[in-house]
Image (cartoon, rainbow, N blue to C red; front, side, top):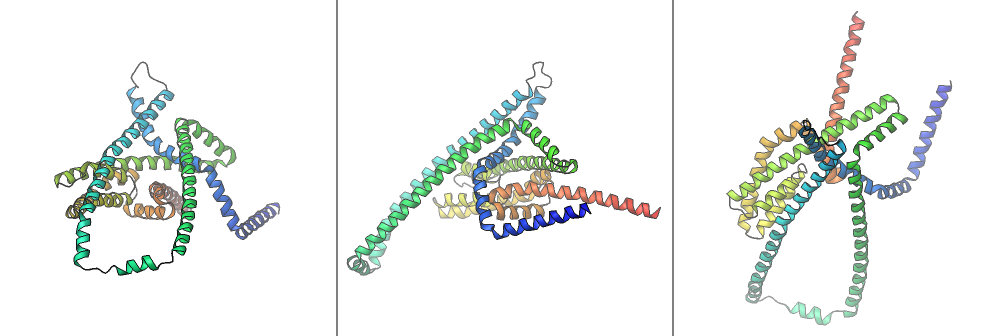
Length: 378
């Protein structure tokens, strides 16, 4: 009877809480937004730390195996710091390489576009003159317009522009501050991940039932392994695709071969969407030089992308995650709809973990069912 009363009390409390939440849904959303803004640097820092920990963990394993037979083997803490520093150096080198290739090409493209516009202006003026285009409406608008109303509209627009500019500057400062704190938090998380893991494990087993704590820790281990395999396979595939694209552009005498290779390698880290982004940027860059070359660029890019998707991607990334292509596509689609690019990246390993857990649970249920049938037959 006491147990029944406790269940009814819990159901009543939950029902009243849900009703109150639905009646004040807008206030709850506003408060949730404020809380998210408050802890946003921690969330972003955790995501950055998750990305950084993949190469750091790989370097740690290599360094430990390298110093395994050494008499003066550094401590695990020193090896972790060395791995973290090497990872930051590699990231900085990649950023410098991209900027070194990107900025000169963009400057050259802007100069080329300016030269083409400057050369086409006289042709346009000559065409308007030969076509005998009537510009009397422009004179009538200029002399007959209500200039007081025009100046009033300009003043109102200027006020709106100043307000929007101030809001944009405030948002920019907020983004910069959030980014700085997120980077600092990610560094602390990366360097102290073992201590954070021990603290989280202790809290899980202290406040949850052992079975629930085991399930949570198992899920975290599977997600970490799946995400590491996914990111490693995606980076390997991105490097291969970037090299192939650079070689193809050089072979077919299309400009920006090295730049397109680097852009393709960077954008290919994002599944499915990255290929379209790098393709669009490549075609636009080549279009500024020669429209006919842009058609050739599009054909070559699609051909290389097709070869890579059919023969390289399934072997490199598919095996690393262990997720069928259909499931990966659905996961990327749902993640992209919910959370954009971050959702595309995280939902593929998340779905891989869910599929693996469902397989394990289904296998256990089938074994238990077979045992039950045997016991009945006996």
